Length: 132
Image 1 (cartoon, rainbow, N blue to C red):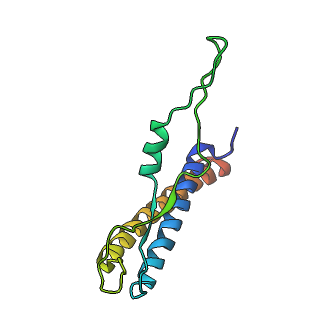
Image 2: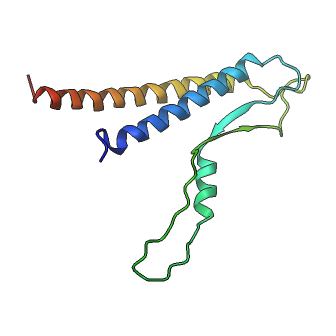
Image 3: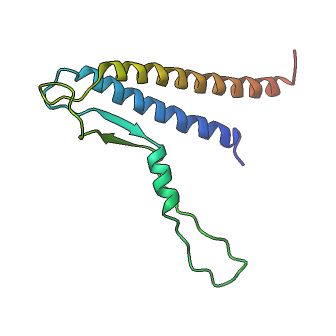
């Protein structure tokens, strides 16, 4: 049994995703004038759909045996967009798109932090013995 439950682990995964996405966006913005630089993005949905479509079934010798589901150790990955070119120097970073993605990611990150703070405040209330 975990002290914090699975909610905190899920929030931690979300924070890890958001942090990696923020690094990718910052790297894209920093390289906006770099020749032949291709923008990078952190994806989760594509990886999820790919994994869900590749179901893994283990051989069961008894109907009471549990089925096995394959889980990936990493729930998100960095991909490079190579199909587009916005600038004459081969660079495909769209600053407006990156700034919009950065703002959206910051809101997402802050909402996760707020939820995590709420979980810890609830735990603190329980430790102190309820309402004061």
